[in-house]
Image (cartoon, rainbow, N blue to C red; front, top):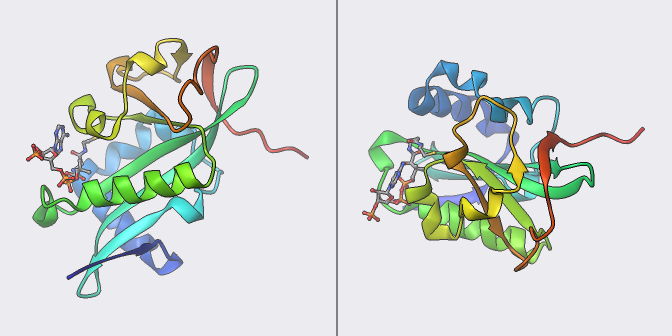
Length: 167
Ligand SMILES: CC(C)(COP(=O)(O)OP(=O)(O)OC[C@H]1O[C@@H](n2cnc3c(N)ncnc32)[C@H](O)[C@@H]1OP(=O)(O)O)[C@@H](O)C(=O)NCCC(=O)NCCS
């Protein structure tokens, strides 16, 4: 049986190992990581899946801002499922559960960099990011968004940035 639960601090090492396995150690060079540096993930939305005490999947979300107007948004990722457990619906379960939590919590916009053929099934679309910029280098075809509140991205433009911490 697979247990889905909130990420706990004790997961950290196994998550790093899983991410290294599935994305390679160079993953830290990806520009999405620049938006996460020094920023805590949103704990209520970060979930893990375990089987017999072994961590087999994880999903995390980070707060970001868009443009000079500093429109708040979520940045989904990374999501990772261990090789032996891929294509069994674990990723889908983590995606649908946490997107529901985010919607219920009142978030309006979710962004990610990823494969459109996978994420489109959850409602993510490249069309919604055409007025937005993302720190380069990134393949802009993989820059996708989901509106939890229909129309939330209408009139929103500019660069996705790390959240500014008010003093
Ligand atoms: C991508 C990932 C999170 C999906 O989770 P998962 O639990 O394996 O996938 P699910 O069981 O939810 O969904 C399986 C379906 O997604 C498809 N799929 C999986 N990864 C895909 C991708 N990168 N692009 C398109 N489709 C993909 C499978 O072919 C399968 O299709 P089907 O439902 O038509 O049979 C997981 O496979 C993973 O961590 N992969 C390693 C990292 C990676 O490749 N990331 C690339 C995406 S950014």
